[in-house]
Image (cartoon, rainbow, N blue to C red; front, side, top):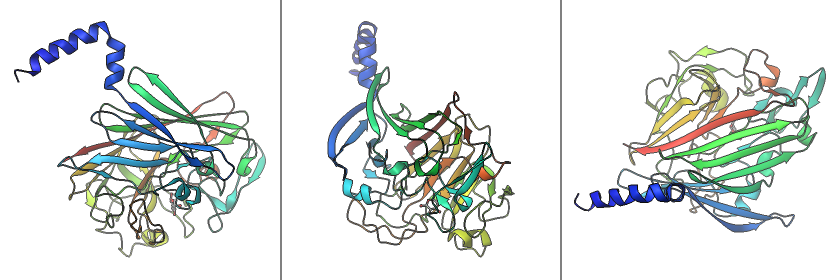
Length: 379
Ligand code: BGC
């Protein structure tokens, strides 16, 4: 106590003279290093973001992947809470979108086709009869141009990708940007934006698989999940929304109060059978465009809490049903079925074909924006 007072006085005095520099020092620092090369010989980098009171986060400009999030448990012990690979080679070959930024259109488009301005566009059918996550050459496969920008809160990482007209079948040249930053409240913030030179559709998200007990530590069925949602978009057997907004009440998709992810996951509820567990878009309560709480997850063993805030109308809860142990993760342990869960903040799946859903068309001169914060704390 005796020592803190003079220190506080000194800090205040210093702040008035070198205000900006002091603030920057208290904010985020980014270290960058070369991380390997693509098969085409382009250099890939790894960026590490750190800030007092926030998790330490690694991001690569290949696919704009989130590579690791080191977050402390209730005893201060850090663990990596997202699934991923130990090196760039793993990410270059990734088929599970482990931490990827997904685009141009996250989730499914029915039959791999949609119409816009009287024209029909044909996309790859890379998921049964449907198009998934922007196609085989989606944004997760691209090298993004990095820029470290220093502002009043320290460094932020800006990644930009120019998707040419016709890429993966989508119309219009789209410039997409994702800014990764750490917040003073322990959050990892992702600010996405995009502009186009012709009418197109866009829906960007991050596909991180979380395991708050630490990646590779087993299944996520004991995590307590709360979702700020009264309704979800039921799907057909190929996981395309039927168009209905169904109240969660009385179903195993009711997460309005915290409940273990595993408590009802194998209930004989037809919607759970379609996805082999949770693989559903929830309508987030409140006004799209406003940054608001979408979900809160608590892992009782470690005490870690993850809160997901977003401006998006929906969030996809995916309980890692298709993980099958074939991916060996960054610490050498296989990722078994339900070894991670995703909370993908997004526009609703198949919106280009569902006029009743919030619109996903981007016109020249307009700007697509979405913000999502993954905020960590302990209980
Ligand atoms: C989809 C799942 C899919 C997973 C990995 C999720 O966004 O909803 O159906 O298996 O991504 O591709």
